[in-house]
Image 1 (cartoon, rainbow, N blue to C red):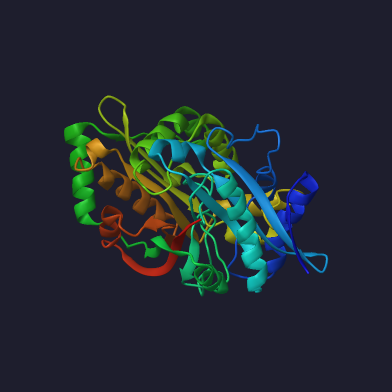
Image 2 (image 1 turned 30 degrees about the vertical axis):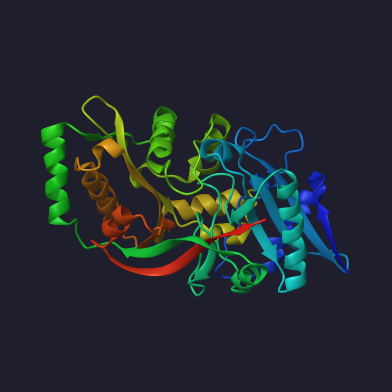
Length: 376
């Protein structure tokens, strides 16, 4: 017998978070999330980091006394207000290969969202654009990244059988660093430095923490502006910003950060790479204690691969040449560190500016993620 329950305690939330660790045990392609951050999403007092942008419920399925499926139902109130819509989201779907379990889980999630006045559901989408999103539909033979995810192929079959259809896709690429920086990139970068007095302020810092403390708000403001028209995106409030910084601050290297400012010290372009943390996260199951931080910090010191997590240019400066400065700095540091490849994470399939950018590098387009939609 299948029973659907709503998470009603921290103890139950830990069981909810334990499910993917069991489903993907010894799976070489899966990367766990930070465990404590996932547990903290259960927020009965309404004081969590996402309180200003969303409300949510967490459902799980039990069969023969064992949890066999889970899903998060999210209503991003900020997004709905901005776009005058009644949209719900499902997130963090994990289920054993049992369609009946999946169906009952989705019915519970959709039922709550419908009670709350929603008339359509999209997903997988998280609380915001820097949260987990997308269902893998191509590229199952490749390992996911820390900023992405991996799922079993039957998830897409279940969703489509249930009535979900494609809303849009993201593409992921693997880029191979060249032996030297493109002469064209070097020429443009030098020109904008000399003629426009642009600077890459990240290169002026040796300590990553000092750089982030100084520029974190400028960076988030720039991201909010540059990404505002992409699907599912909302401005990130201070609690979310601070949580993101706390989560990744110790894993960042200033060598893999680029922040371009104009002649008035206004931030106009940003690029960020993560070191490959997946092996370390797999070793510790996303749990920082007792040895999780040791594995993670060890992986940061000399990674073989990196994730191209974020790149953006202020809309008013897209033809200014500042992007060449980002590419120059990052490419030089990748070559210096002997990085084997860089993963792009999720790029919206119709973002032609990004697609054209990667054409200048040896690469493969190896993974595809999908966002589904359904009226309720």
